[in-house]
Each structure stands twice: as structure tokens, then as C-alpha cells.
Image (cartoon, rainbow, N blue to C red; front, top):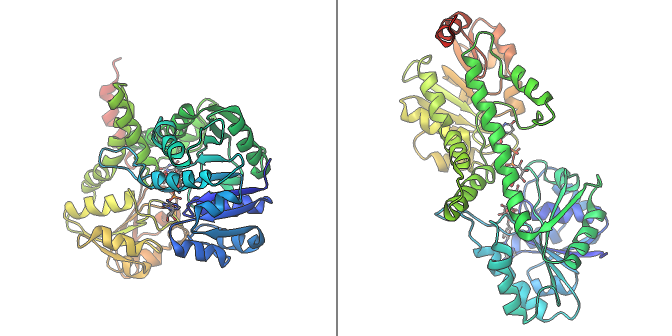
Length: 454
Ligand SMILES: NC(=O)C1=CN([C@@H]2O[C@H](COP(=O)(O)OP(=O)(O)OC[C@H]3O[C@@H](n4cnc5c(N)ncnc54)[C@H](O)[C@@H]3O)[C@@H](O)[C@H]2O)C=CC1
Ligand SMILES: O=C(O)[C@H]1O[C@H](OP(=O)(O)OP(=O)(O)OC[C@H]2O[C@@H](n3ccc(=O)[nH]c3=O)[C@H](O)[C@@H]2O)[C@H](O)[C@@H](O)[C@@H]1O
């Protein structure tokens, strides 16, 4: 057991791990190449925006410090977690560029250290990367041998942005890929101290853990796509309602209700790229990974499909407001955001588009360039909108009133991808279109008739 850990990379995940571990009584040294991040942590502030992070770092300041110097961190801790970016390369795989640089510094630090030390990779990588891409760097730079002089593990986290600290301290399980028993034992002892919910530990080889991490994300996105497909089915059967159907499916213990809500597709910095990377690996190894490719293609095509369906209902050239440009509520992240794809697809289809987001507006403005207007004022977004599409469950959108959306207009169409604004349907000025529900029972019944023989 150790009391002293170091965290290499003080970004969205690493900074929350610093705070979470310190909150459970460990002494934590953070390392980053970015001086601003190091200075922020040393000043008791969060280097990135995340729920509760600022307060937690401030609260546990006496057990937290940060440095630019990896060697200092290695000498003063027994175990180092590496959480640097592993961006997608042009093929869809993950580049080890940042991780290699971090491992080089760690190798040089290990050379100067007499005692045993464990290096843990937390960043997402493809199977084989830790042992064959990064370990050789450690051994070359340190002149030492893994398993004898130092240990190595792969230990990814399953955290969602916005709830990183809670998820980190209360995981469903702890995925631990180990080079050998000794490395795994030290890492498991850290987990036992940090976990608030005594989460079970699954220990395995490094390669199985690398695959398991990315497979969890791919599998969960398949559930999401399945729910989105059910949404479309429900729009075509009399009385169809995807939430009713998902609730029923969720009762089956083999399936479960989580991540089975038909909405508007999955986005963000992780889910989409993990499918692409695993499919890239499948193609390279001649594994039939079409499921992953289809899932990715289906998800990316959702915005265009919705626009094609809406064109039947909405006047061409109409003023359209898209509410929600980040990939989910409470986030400023627009990477692979369905809302951004929707703005692009709508303006390509000839609509005049204004996008709104409280947090993501500045980033969305750059991404959308001149194709759509972007604002962080809800009032401005709604001012001339004849059609309003709601892509995220932002609390401001859930609280929208008919007076806000209709104002001086005779009629406004609300397209609600998450079916949360049913109260607006009661106002005569509002035409409410909840996606995932049938809007024309008689028409749907007629279309079903050719499906059976009597
Ligand atoms: N953010 C998330 O929700 C999750 C992220 N991950 C994975 O964790 C990894 C990191 O993700 P984020 O924290 O979101 O990235 P991020 O971009 O927010 O932060 C990375 C940090 O690493 C620092 N850094 C880069 N090279 C460094 C080096 N050589 N030495 C020290 N610091 C260095 C950067 O300056 C930055 O502060 C990625 O592989 C990601 O896929 C996995 C699960 C969840
Ligand atoms: O590997 C990662 O980095 C992380 O990726 C996701 O976390 P995150 O992308 O932050 O966000 P989620 O809250 O899981 O949402 C992802 C997307 O799925 C969509 N979603 C979610 C649930 C659902 O039922 N339907 C649905 O469309 C959301 O709208 C959003 O676009 C996973 O949830 C984490 O477990 C994982 O660690």
C-alpha cells in the first residue's frame, strides 16, 4: 500500500483524479507540460471546468501539489498514472505521440530512482500499445527491466464529462490490466483506498483490458443506436412511443435501461472515435467488424435523415433555431456534436439556421463558420424562429414556455428529440413534434396493412 501517487496529465480526467485521490487521503503530485495547469493546481484551483472540481481541489490543497518535472513526481511517489491525450490519427487509430513523450520522461525518472515504482497508463489506446508501443520506451530510457525493477499496468476509467469525480470514485467495476501480479497488487491497493463504493476489481492481461475498455464504449453506443432505430419505428406505428418501448426492454435484466433512450445520436470526444478505432483494428486484423462500422455510419447519418424527414413537414427556407450545440447538456464540448451536424445539414437543405448554446457558442461559431448564425442568447435565437429544434436536455430548454417560443408569432413548430417539452403542446400557437412518437395514428395504421397476410 502507498500513500503517495503521481498523475501525469492534468486535463479533464487527470485533474479530477488528482482531486478524487486527495479527497480519499492520498498525497498527490500532478505533472503537466502546460505551466498554466500546474500553476492553477498549486494555487488550489481547477485547471479545467468540471463539476465540483474547483471546490474539491481547494478543499484538499494540503495533499495536492503540481510540477512540470516528471522526475520530481516519480521520486516522491510510488505509482504514476498517465492520462495524456491519445488523439485519433487520420486512419482512425490513436496516436501515441503525447504518451511516448510522457513515457520518455518517466523512463528517465525511473533511471534516477532506486526503489520499485509502478507506471499505469489510463489514456485510451488500442490493444498492444502499452506493452509494445510504450514499454520499450520505459526500458530504453531507464536501462531497467519491467517486472523486475518497475511495474506496469493499464487502467482506464469509465467516467462521463460533467460527472467525472462521482464516476471516478464510484465505478461499476475497476478494470485492471497488469504486466505481473506485483504491479497489479499495488494498483489494486490504491483502488481499494480510493473507491467509495468498494467496486469489484477485474484483473487481467494488459491487452484484454485495453480491448475491454474500448469494447464497453462500442457496446454502449450500439444500445444508443438501437434506441434511435426504435424511435423511428415508433414514429411509424399507431400510438408508438419509444420511451414506453425502451422502458419495457430495460426491464429485461440482460438488457437494462441505461443508455437506451432514443434521442439524437451519440457525440463527444470519446464514443464516436472509439468505434472508429476498434473498426480500424478489425480491418487491420481481418476481423469482421462490420457491426462497428455500421453503428458509426448509422449514427453519423442521423442528422441528415432527420432533416430529410423534417423537410416533409417544414417549409423550405424557414428560419430554424437549433437549441443545443454541445454534444450534451452542461458541456462546452462540440466534438462530434449532433447539434453541429444538424446545423450543417439544415443549412445545406436551404434553411436559415441560428444555433444556440450557453456554454458552447464560441466554439460552435468557429466550427460552423458562415453556414449558420450562433448565439448564447436564447431570446435572440428564438426571436424570428418559425421552427425550433431541441437537441440537448439543457435546463433552460426544459423550462421553455409557449410565450418564449411563440412570442408575437401565430405559430411555431417545436421539434423535440428527447420528448421533454410536452407542456408546450397545450398552447394553440405551438405545433409540437416529439421525435420517437407517432404523430399520425390513422396514416401509420394504413401503412402497416401490407405487412401481414390474412
Ligand atoms: N475526458 C474523458 O471523459 C475521458 C478521457 N479518457 C482518455 O484519457 C486521455 C486524456 O483525456 P482528457 O483528460 O480528456 O485530455 P485533456 O486534453 O483534457 O488533458 C490532457 C492533459 O495532458 C497534458 N499533457 C500532454 N502531454 C503531456 C506530457 N507529456 N506530460 C504531462 N502532461 C501532458 C496536457 O497538457 C493536458 O493538460 C485520453 O486518452 C482520453 O481518451 C478516457 C475516459 C474518459
Ligand atoms: O471513454 C470515455 O471517455 C467516456 O465516454 C462516455 O462519456 P461522455 O462521452 O462524457 O458522455 P455520456 O454522458 O456518456 O454521453 C455520450 C453521448 O451519448 C448520448 N446518449 C446517452 C444516453 C442515451 O440513452 N442516449 C444517448 O443518445 C448523449 O446524448 C451523448 O451525446 C462514457 O459514458 C464513459 O463511460 C467513458 O469513460
